[in-house]
Image 1 (tube, rainbow, N blue to C red):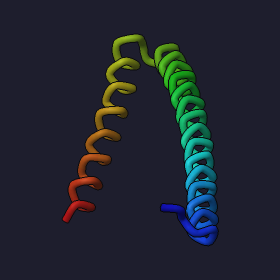
Image 2: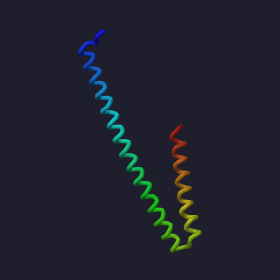
Image 3: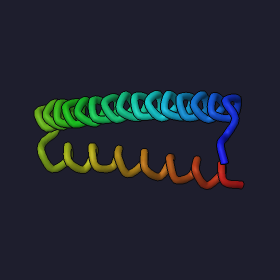
Image 4: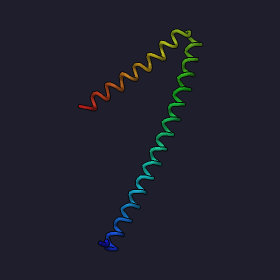
Length: 87
């Protein structure tokens, strides 16, 4: 049994469109991954800089408490927002 040329063309076009969509999705994912890694690196440097500045001003122990508390509050805010978004 042979398939018609119209069906063969439709299959070829469909597979080409699917491959193009997969390539775009992979490129988009790679871009978001790179941006996420750069944001994480910048957060590390900003945290270290803030810690050192606070440590110079009020001491090491209080600087650690302040930076850690800031991240704790930020995590709580994210959890509250996610909790209300699910309703």
